[in-house]
Length: 216
Ligand SMILES: *Cc1c(COP(=O)(O)O)cnc(C)c1O
Image (cartoon, rainbow, N blue to C red; front, side, top):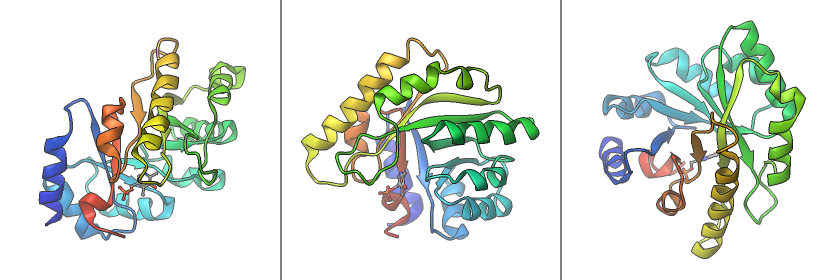
């Protein structure tokens, strides 16, 4: 099936309140343009250099999301154009994003990445660290970054009950924080293999790559 028809099928299956991030990492610009031509405007990349090259080459009404691990020394390259950074996993990174955002007079939205997978290879905070960060004085004085929710990745497994447990855990953390932080709007969870389950568990944003663009 073509990219356009895959995208169409997925769009049709999503509830209207769920945002689709088309994860285009490693894919060539013509593939992204095919998705763009069908109306897709939100793209996710996991490398700053690749995202910057695509941003330069592509129409400027695209919303670029950084979904990968971010090194603090590269933040400056994406600040001029990035819309949402999904994988914030340290206060240090948030401070660095804010510093560059102030310089560029930009406001950048961020999600805190929470470690939910049982495997220990994935980045992220635990629940206590998320609360501590949001309550810290250092966070409260940041003017140009806005934490609008949480992001998580479930274990890479076909055990549906385990994936569900991990998504439920993230949703319940989100639900405890959301009443205290009115800017919380976004729970980013779900990829090609598990997005239907993620939505059933309360996701508001899914990050889908291979089901749209084919295997990498
Ligand atoms: C690559 C990636 C995705 C998309 O994965 P698919 O299985 O291709 O849908 C989603 N989220 C993150 C953080 C990724 O790195």
